[in-house]
Image 1: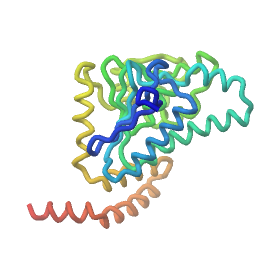
Image 2 (image 1 turned 60 degrees about the horizontal axis):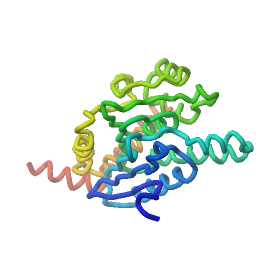
Image 3 (image 1 turned 120 degrees about the vertical axis):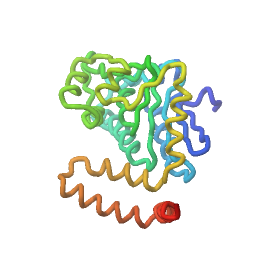
Image 4 (image 1 turned 90 degrees about the vertical axis):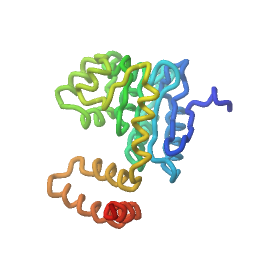
Length: 255
């Protein structure tokens, strides 16, 4: 299979793993095969000790337009069992993105719609170009943005989430940043350089500390205050025992 024919491209540049959705002729639309390949790429990055950050992007002009037409046709004719398997595969992808030990950063050019918007917001950080667009238009075809709802609700307020999900509105990168769906917006012309500069920060940080922080942050979802503090005690102790902590504390004390 040539590079051009691969559904997902994977490349490691130093400490940065770059995963590219590679169906530009289909606006990087999701289907069963692409989702499987994306999960494989994420697992590969997670297993690479040299990788400290993952950048997820789309080839061509769009980030991801959601499910492709063939996939929609397939699910409209599938049995309940087949639809359960298909939905669970996407669920596994979203779970995996949180289980990857290092930060997963979405670099969004063009449109991130429906499942594509869910894919971006499932990342730990979302960076967008000025002209990027976001939205959940599923209701316009009688569909429910069901799994991505769990992600969106953890990103923005209840009322803003309700508005986006039920109107199917498409919003700009600036609006998405204001809502909390996007972390940073960079100028289109300088986007690649800005993304590279942003993620380079993780190359200089303790991988174990960032990993433990990511795990604890998501672990505390749904916990009450006392449970969150107790979980924090466990991670605090784990962090103290890491090689990174001992080495960096010793270096700090020598200053």
